[in-house]
Image (cartoon, rainbow, N blue to C red; front, side, top):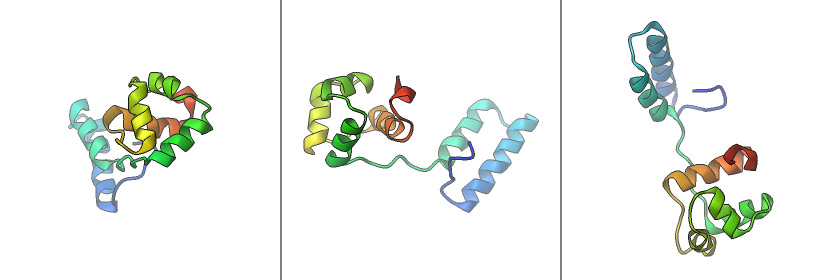
Length: 107
């Protein structure tokens, strides 16, 4: 977990720090360490229709190009922006990355 990522709680932060030390010493393998990393990260926030539209306009992309960047269909982006559906899974993660880091991080 990097310095910018915050743990869900102080307890999870302590557990994660202990797990990192155990991994560094060879007592925890890489797979187990990834599980600890995933447990300790904050959940990705959801995006409503207006936030998605504002994000798309901020990065100056059309719905079709945003869909291509997120590896989804243009109709999915259109449905997100009218509030008919909500992004989830990898699309939500990529939207969050696009929001936080910009277009260069996703390309």
